[in-house]
Image 1 (tube, helix red, strand yellow):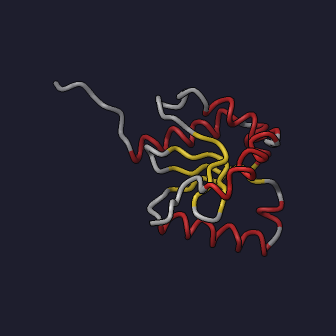
Image 2: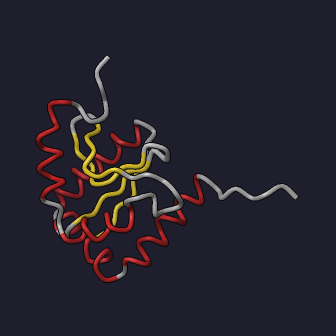
Length: 129
C-alpha cells in the first residue's frame, strides 16, 4: 500500500516550502503552532498524495490553505483549487481557505472562523450535569 501522507519523494519540496513560508503563512503558523487552537496539533507543509498543503491537523482531518490574489482572480487557478479541494474531500478531509489579505489584516477573524469550524465538527466537552 502506498503511503498517502508525507511521501518520501516530497521531502525536499516540503522542506523548501517550510523554509520559504510567505508572510501570511508565517502569521497564520504563529497562531496555529504549539496547540494554540483548542489544543489541536497542526503541521505545516504536509504532502497528501501528490499535493502539499499549507497546514494540516491530523486529529481533525483539517487542511488550511493561505491563498494569494491569484487564487481568486485567475479562473484557471480557481479551477485547480476546486479540483484539489475535491480530491482532499474525497479523502474525507475538510478544507478551509483564507485570503492572504484576510490573514494579514484580520487574523482574529480568521482564527475565529477556524475555531468556529472546529467547534462544529468537535463540540467542546461539557461536564455532566
